[in-house]
Length: 167
Image 1 (cartoon, helix red, strand yellow):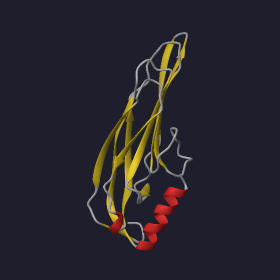
Image 2: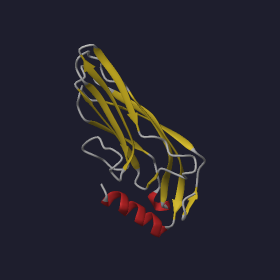
Image 3: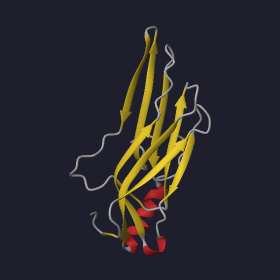
Image 4: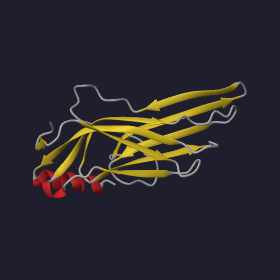
């Protein structure tokens, strides 16, 4: 348990799905955590599972699907170098004269000794997706695992300010 927080729920899993609005078009979805700011409630993220659909396998053409999960709204898919990005996944199909090869890259889960991945202090999280050179639109599904916790007023204020200012 992070210092200054008191758990107010057991571990819970929150599912999400974001469908690309059209093939190769940046799309973002938001999931409301129903946190109570009056009670200084935050969500402590312990694990994330992201499962994007694979890109189209188009033989000699390179195709790709990229996704990310962030604590703030974004205008593009992010990678882990962004402070607010908690997870990302990238699947690409490398085409050549002999056919296509599929590769998958996903941010690794932390070792079990790590207490948490991040803390969401605002009321929702955001999932982004975009394809590249695909014929059909793609989607990402997944689960966010964690628990609700109550912070002190000072810690809550610092967490919200840090999250919002680093957007």
